[in-house]
Image 1 (cartoon, rainbow, N blue to C red):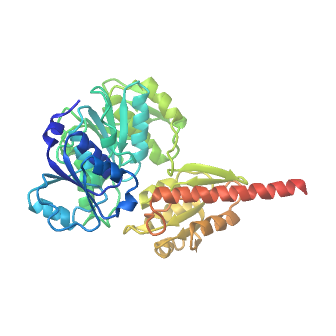
Image 2: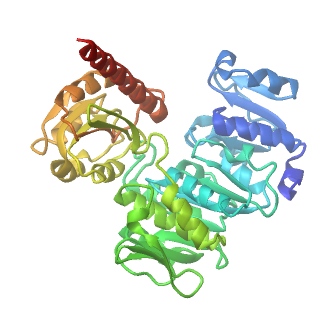
Image 3: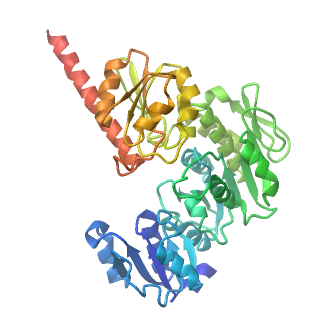
Length: 468
């Protein structure tokens, strides 16, 4: 089905800036809409894999390398990838010319005619988005899950029927470029200091997160974690109907925990959903994620019995407190997605066993001293790598013994010699990955590769001992 916006895009000359996942999906959606597409990227054609030849055959004008003068001439709309800062000269020129600059999220939303659930927050949004997707699937309803979770929504909406549902993880970078985006259910999990290398101030970052609600009306829902005082304070400014969730207290009309039971008051009345102890996701942060996901699912009419079944069986996603292996009684856990202080704080609270913590990477103007108290409670030894290693060591001084090493392999080799049966070796960096890896996924995969190597070594040693 062709939407009104897609009809308006037909014949328009649209510039897509940045050709990573979201940019590529935007190009394809624009081509389906009949737009004349100009696609720009700093990379050369050899780095764009196979899709550039297909685009050329379909009439796309590719502009690679430096942006030439006059690129904006005749452009009706700009779609910027979230990784492209809005301050780059090309986007500044677009705004000066009066050309609207949107992101792929706004484009996808404008070209869809289904209901949307959107999830944001500093931490937990990918897990919560995936969990909501599974909760919706349990009802048999068609659902498209994507956004910042790793799959661009523009590529997922084409075959979705009008009674389907989009569940999207949205980042602050994506929210920076919305115009009409209005989720039927918006979810805000938490806000802590992050991405201050991109925003001028923490206040600007907070404002970006709250944009998820700015176009809502009283017929829409805003699921809000009111245990986060910053979110609770902003609830009065949200135009949608606020549906609170809480771990610590009963909240009218929301989802909360009482005496170890998850309870819902959504839709009138009260229902005990299930015991907290039966949740499939570990850790206190995942309890908030589960409460928010449940609230969103109930608001789109998912049956609470089906929901409880999913909540019992859903497990952590890759790179998020992911159990990798157990070697000689030591548990190896990949939490590479923990790229800020707050996510690491909750990771350190998620285990009853002593932790050997591997952290470090590229600093995002983080306050590592906030990890001193949780580290002192649960970490026996810490091993840091990357550009931020010395800063992290200084911030943790006196709380735990700290070693600095050169590589992830070195960190794991050292951790293995220090670990005792029953310990947890936890990769939870508190930093970006770009000093040593392509992204957090690359870092997590490298961790798992090195753990597999250690496991093979241990197996070889066991074999030798068995034949002696």
